[in-house]
Image (cartoon, rainbow, N blue to C red):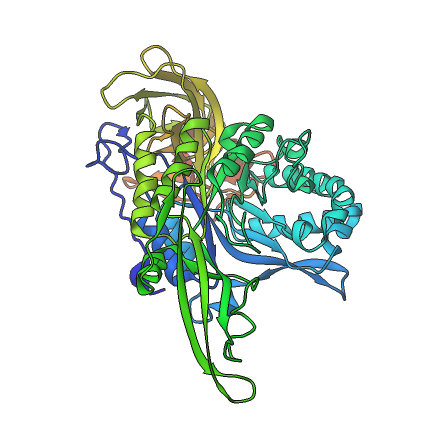
Length: 589
């Protein structure tokens, strides 16, 4: 990846009479596509995966960098989250792709795999202490990198441990998911899982029931179904459409469809079906009937077929493409004799039409979207087919305005926040759930402070008392029919209040006290006593600091009889604007 791949967005805010209007991300487009595409970014293919993400940012809400694995540490008898990205990309710091993704407005939910050996992870999840340690390892990774969540790809249960272990592992997995869900949700993070297919347990063909979708449905936020690898050992489709739809139907019977993502294969397989002649020793192990299939990426499929004079045929029922060809291998036998063989080969892969038919299931069942293994394998037409499907089911764009009655408040003083939510044709949206959120000065996260719903005219009006300054915004929930709307933020300053208890008079040449308290109560705040002298305010001595109740006490004296004007001043802090008390006069007698 080069720096030119990094997307830089420049935002300009225009403030007019404290009213701000949210602007759609593509002002020139009549329709903005629904963000239905997600997918994985392997650590070993960033040069192709990352540009695909950035160029399709209008379709993508979140991605899963395939960058981490759990390893067992025998010395500590625990697991560690191992970074796979950095060793594979030593010259490109991880911060660069993360910045590119975030600058594109895309959430990051990295995938962590099971990198342990047979039954190790299952046995760790069986014990309360070690299960909690696994949970902590994952949560610490998410929080330390400020990721939006985690995606679990624990395929070892399915393909390493063996299906005889599934009955034993299933309750361990369920207990782990529930504990991890609580821990992540406490941090406002997302829990995603990626698993092979399941069918209704009541049916004869159950699929990979170890993952128990029905028992964890309420605990997870995303289910990404690997609806591919249907044919591995023998020639056949990568993931037939009806087979993929059947597992989707089971998934949405046990959880909300919005949690479910159907898998897309960006690769194809190429099998040897028969061999005539004796193959050279250099290829004899792989060029034989029943050998492991070769793989290729979708964007190379047409070129591969053309190079052997093959004609790809699209199967309407399976919604996949296949072609047959012959390849001649020349070389020498292990004895050094010249030899040749001709292999008959069969290839299967998904293309743009395959992606379109699977994307259509998103609309049919109102799914969360599609998820690609992997982003960057697809050709341009495949991306465009997803875009067309996303445009066809685009939610109505909602715009919002935000107004506040007063942007500078005294502590304890109320301000009224008004917002309105409209469709593109200016029709108000009634019944939208709206969240008022604040972000403190020097804070990076938004905190919800109030929830309400819009009235018939699409408005809300909420009186608020804020304890400290910062920014405020209004955010409406997205639904299948309507997009989420987030208003740009308005800055609010909150001034501390100073209550003063001065004497009305004091004898000259004698000490007297001026006490007070600041609100909100704050310990250690610097407080200045200032005197009006020669046309300006002059600080008297060094500042005091408030105690735990926000109280302070000045001791001073005056040598000359007369009227002396004072005030108390607090400088600007990290979270509060500076403020001065009302001037007060002490008669010096």
